[in-house]
Image 1: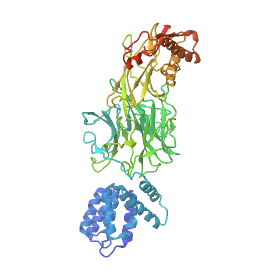
Image 2 (image 1 turned 90 degrees about the vertical axis):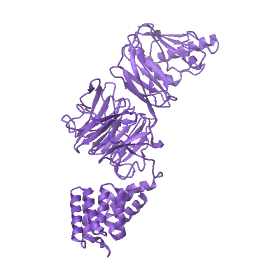
Image 3 (image 1 turned 120 degrees about the vertical axis):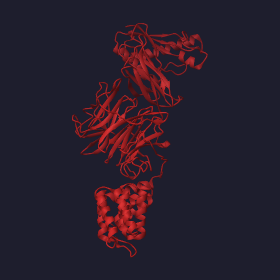
Image 4 (image 1 turned 180 degrees about the vertical axis):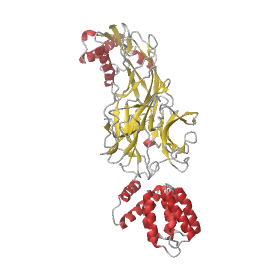
Length: 630
């Protein structure tokens, strides 16, 4: 852009812009006006556009109709992204000598588009393309952007960004905001003194952010750390480290974990995540089992890749996301929302308004990603827009921008995301896992199942103290499954359809040691009313039971069926027996020896709740797994 300004400047000086009689050109300007103009030229050569504006204003004060000065002023304002002021300068140039617009048509079109006048910008760029002798890739790209803007069915979207203020923003650039699921912790990158990138952290109480603090060692170092993402539970930080001594390429991905004594020393993800190529901008899924990131390769530019953590703790070979996400252009800054279904990213390969635009895509039932949707203007502009994150509530988004009310460089802003672009509203289930006999906390993994879809929506690992946090979209029914060696597996189901989305759902998980007479209710075995055919939603739970029996080949068990008190004693007895037999039949079909299994019906005996309420009756209609011998 700087070279472009100087090139246009030389055209202005060389051509004289065919000025009309009442105008002032460089050739016929006074010595004093020329001197100010020359100082502006020197400032442009030294990348000092703001200083150049001051000198040009001096020149115009001396010579009010100084067309060269207005043309150069417009170019400087475009460079500074002050498009309104650029429009004013170019309009003045047009009034003084409309024929002088040709050398600045491209910049003038950008000024128009920068203020939302895409129709005018398109007309001007078409005019420019009609008069130039050779093709211009830059002008053709701008034309495509303007056509997209004009033809977009929704010309603008609601957008009212608010600066996060002094606690977060400073005269240094702040960018790459990242939040925990409770929206109380914000971590971001700050380029200190314009050189070294470090991470800063702030916390929110009573809707106010505390003064941001440098995270310090061992995370921050003398090297550049940036493009970070804090896990939803706040216990893991993934980030980009460039030119680190142990790095595999120019930039690699690293991680640090939060312990009782602080953050651990950063570790390189190693192969196959990191390669000799450029890896950056990582983002963890809510359960920390999936990693999205950008990788730039010599043959394909920047694309978004995904890798999953396997049972042995290793990460799978990263794969490019599909063609609905990646293009022949650049795709960067992936952000997977806590709902696990909505991906935000930046791209200059999909149709858009300018350089990088922000898009979102929804996960499809088959696991693929749907079409990329442009977030719209003015969230996206003619400049590069990227690095968007969204709170768990789905409403509040954060991004970095160097807007007119910034503290001097990039600042972090928040805004309310319009409804069509919001992810699923998400809250979190939290609690701890413990031994029912000793009450000791247990470290383990927890599978969270979407009951309607029948698939595993997340696998959440507890910390060493047994604590867990599982972000989940509201409005659905879920099951929890826990398997730990030496214990009966645990299962339960719960609904977030009517739960207050602003209040976390708390559930502590008891695990019973394997022992004779130990028993659990199989909460996720389902039958239709008065029927004994297993419903499809039961399969996940049944397969967990199969796995337990396979892992403990000497275990013998009883499957007990119970009903509520609706109907006759005889009918309930038969129904309970048939339901128990249905479960045993499923187990034998999966290869479990029939001699290890006993099916028994108890009818409406031994109720565990009152039969006077629907909730109590539902609790009494149950299937119980009981250990006979080890």
